[in-house]
Length: 170
Image (cartoon, rainbow, N blue to C red; front, side, top):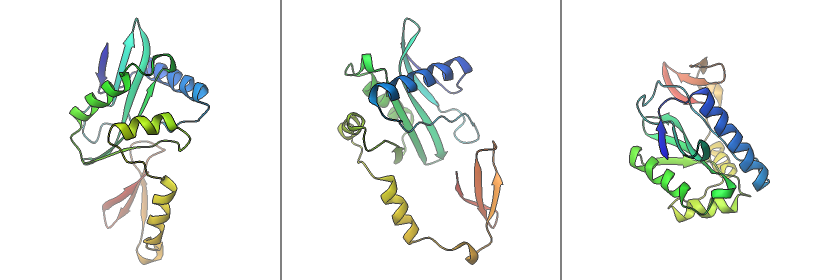
């Protein structure tokens, strides 16, 4: 059964965490992983796509909404059910709901299976380190303007404000 969720309940979050740990252990990699449970941007869009069989979570795709134009996702399929097109079906359902031009996924360079899956689905791999080095070249030192950091919705989410405009968040 393929399902979408706008809100992620505690039970579903626990099941996703268990599947995430199973995938990390089986693959021998600590995979990048994201969940978003704040609803101030794109409130009615699904945050989680998942597939279950006999109440067992076989795979999920979680969405982190960056802003109105950008989203990031991560996707996990139970190792025993890989190769059965569950990931592709999750990804296609996600694409149908999120008609954005900037869709990102974080992936470990060691995850050759995941890179192959993403490449097959029209994603171009990019190195986070390379992107950071490129951005640092054009970085404007803080002394040129007065930055202001503020907590957003949670203690682990911050917005970088310049002249009352959000110019970044983490």
